[in-house]
Length: 128
Image (cartoon, rainbow, N blue to C red; front, top):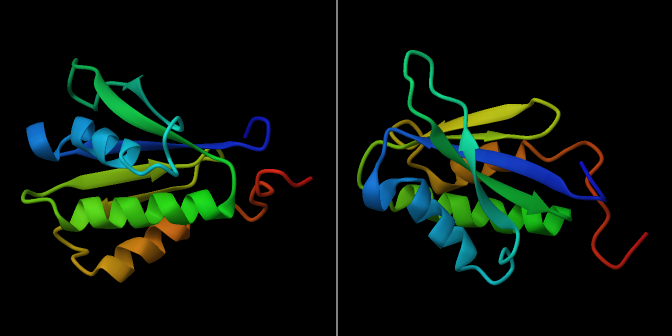
């Protein structure tokens, strides 16, 4: 966490093209509440490969922005036409992996994402 901001790292596996990380970035950036908070960074290679992947980093500043991210991810995931696995990791090392083949229920996806909320979330902007 830096300056009251939590950077969640999101990696997308098992998809390419219209269901890959670029699609997720476009989807997240299309929500005005997340604009300016979404970046792409190089990810370490997957075990057994030499290629570098990409990760999406979303800077969250309040529990409200976490809820916005969770809603955006839920919608993006249930609209995928192929098998997609998304790993979301918070700075403390906690993570959740969501596999849309096993979690077609949008509410279950939302619950797993919201479980990543830190015990001590940052204060809403303009407070503190």
